[in-house]
Length: 68
Image (cartoon, rainbow, N blue to C red; front, side, top):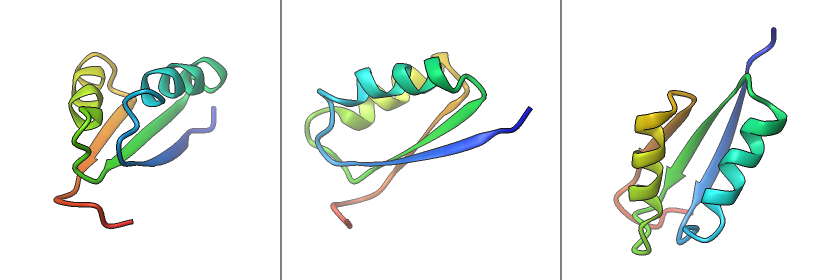
C-alpha cells in the first residue's frame, strides 16, 4: 500500500482545518498530514495538537510567525 504525505500550510484556518483533515483521511486513510502553522492566533495550532494526540497520522509543525 502506498503512503502519501499531504502538506497543509495554515494561518487562521480554525474554520477549515477541522473539516479538511477528516475529509482527507476519509478518501485517503493511508495518508499522513503535516500541518505547518504560522502561529495562528485563532487556535489552529492548538486544534492540530489536540487532533494529533488522538490520531498519529496528523503531524503539526509550529513556526514562530507568518512566514508564507
